[in-house]
Amino acid sequence: ETGVTQSPTHLIKTRGQQVTLRCSSQSGHNTVSWYQQALGQGPQFIFQYYREEENGRGNFPPRFSGLQFPNYSSELNVNALELDDSALYLCASSLGSSRFYEQYFGPGTRLTVT
Amino acid sequence: AQTVTQSQPEMSVQEAETVTLSCTYDTSESDYYLFWYKQPPSRQMILVIRQEAYKQQNATENRFSVNFQKAAKSFSLKISDSQLGDAAMYFCAFIIQGAQKLVFGQGTRLTINP
Image 1: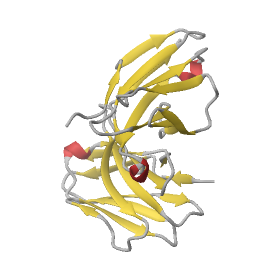
Image 2: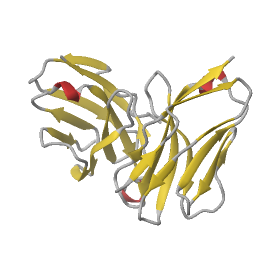
Image 3: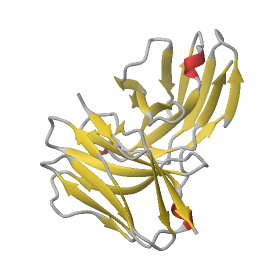
Image 4: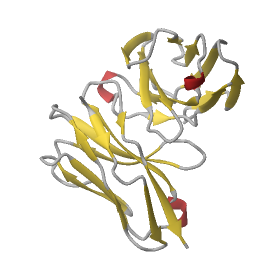
């Protein structure tokens, strides 16, 4: 069974640029959730994708957007990067609407905005 | 509002001793799940233990156990026979049944002294 993977591991961007982060869900899981973890803080929910549709969103502006593909992998896109977007971005996969509570996390992508 | 409070930013314990990490939460819902996650320097969020709110019996996983007090909205984690590999950030979190997002606390950094 393949666990949750994320790419890239680290990246550095300049303010105003755009970035795409990728997540492959655990085998058999059809739901991906994205979280932002600022330094020294707990993760904050960005949004969730279930069967290729957005299924819930946290308090993040529209410049945070996502996609889920037919194989249930997912992308997080952030436009017009700001310094405060520097954080660890975690994705988590789960199995279906009855098991949203059981989320398995990937290793994260560390984004630095300069 | 749904919130989680971890009042101990840092804790330390001698190897082989017992330590308890505190967590309180706030929700008006009655059906939810509570979790303790461990985040080592590798950054991956690892599930330590889960408690269903409808269960009165406290969950136990090997050296890890919880004290769940639903009326007090308290969910503490006890680690027995602490090992060096237990050193990490520990996050308390909960999710409402059927909801999408995990709500995390700010974390407690646990240090194990040899």
